[in-house]
Image (cartoon, rainbow, N blue to C red; front, side, top):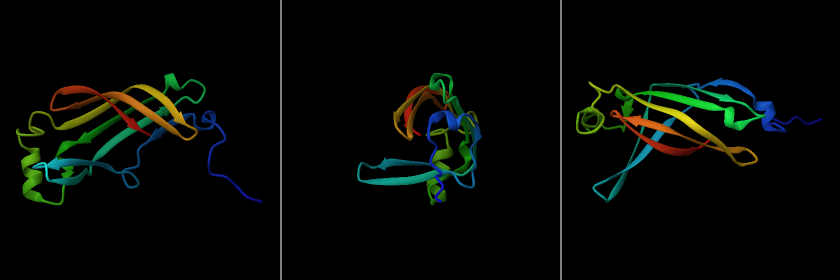
Length: 129
C-alpha cells in the first residue's frame, strides 16, 4: 500500500494556514553596483493564507515582515539598509503584503497578486506560491 502526500484537488487544501518561521524563508536578491548580486533574508515575519479550494477568488494571504530583521550577512550593509536611505525603519518598521488575487497556474501551483508596502509606498506584485 502506498500513501500520497499530494492532495487530489484544491478542495482538499481548503483551510487557514499560518506561516511557520522555522520552516519558511523570506529571501531576496538585489543588484549591487551593477556588478554582483547581494542575497539576504528577513528573519522575523508572520503571515497566514486562507485557501478556498472551491473558489480560489475567495482565498487570501497576508504577510508582515519586521524590517529590522534584515540579514545580508554583513552588519555594516544591514545597518545601511535599515537607515532612511532604504527602509527608514524608525518611521516604517514593517513591510507588508496583502493579497488582492489568487490564480491557479498549474496542478500544484498558484500565483498571489497583492499590495506590497515598503517605506509607506505600495506597489502591486505577483509571487509564485
